[in-house]
Image (cartoon, rainbow over all chains, first blue to last red; front, side, top):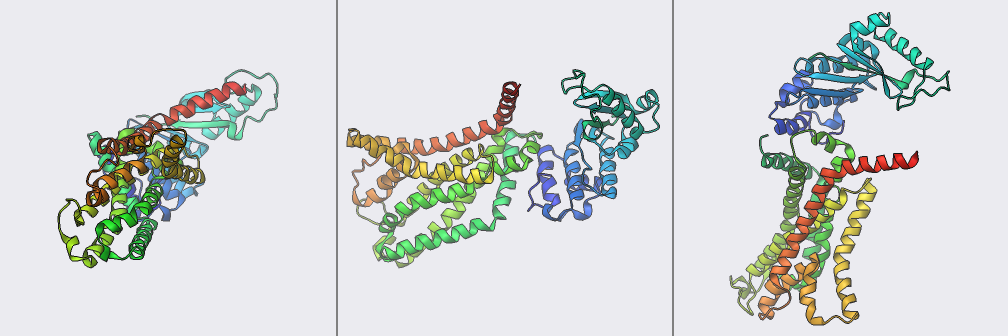
Length: 182
Length: 287
């Protein structure tokens, strides 16, 4: 997260909170960082910084919170904490999370958007999408959509390429976005 | 946060805290004090009086104060932009004007402290060691006075602020720390040497020397130097004045400050749109 290293977690959120009349301590508590409030940003772990970023993003009761890969590079415990923090933010806001962490998306998202090579391959409420693709969870849905996409590879503009029928549409080319209900 | 003024204040506090936690700036102030004190000592010591001290310090001040201002300003706006925090800040209700003003005002206060402190100590040294008549609080012809030194220091502040504002504006177009340093040095050299070289060039091209008093006021260094001659050194030795048009010189220093601030605001407000336009153009050309 692009915060100033010399500032403590509380000072960092204090700056943003002052811009929107928010409460930095409340935001820190919401992501479980109360004990680290007086730690310098430079001394926070990668996961704690990510949580600090989520706390910053939810200051001031925004209508929409957008989190891009909030769990990349984190250990499993921190990933769970980050998603829980994002889910809590969803109590008052619509939270859009872009992620490859399919288990956590499965556990927390209310609606899904699956992107394949720059275009929407599937979207809708989680339960409906799972039923339509005969999938038990988001991971299976992902596989179903990915294999469907590899059968019909498209350009980022949505045009069918017609060649490269064996193109790899899995991995980074397929992206899942989880959306919370508000 | 309810008003733009509130946004300026919040950014101002954050920036001032950052400057206060950068020990390198304090080291620079100590270095400035050593250089200024050394120059006064070499020039005959504090016993010579305030105006002789100003004469000794004028040329070094024209180099050292811009240098300090550029050091304070060259990353002032670049740092947040490079780290990505500016993009985060811009999602909050703080305008580009409030953000730039907050940063620049905080850095100007820091400049005032870092430059004013050493100059005040040198002034105190002269006060304590100068001949008896230098303690007279008068500014009429032929009399040395602490008031003249205070005037000199008061002129140093807008002079440094002009360089700070310009270097901060230049920093908005930097793409790396190295390029920010290069651009800062370029601004410094252009400011210190550019104006005088332009005047010399115009004289060699046949311009009238009588026009120097007018043209010199357009550059920060020329305006500062002219004001010091007009209202500090000249008061004691050449009361008829005529070194520079005071109004024009003051307007020049204020104008450079405003120009830098306006350019910085424009860069912060529209920089991302320019980037998008450039990327679109590159995309079209690349097809």
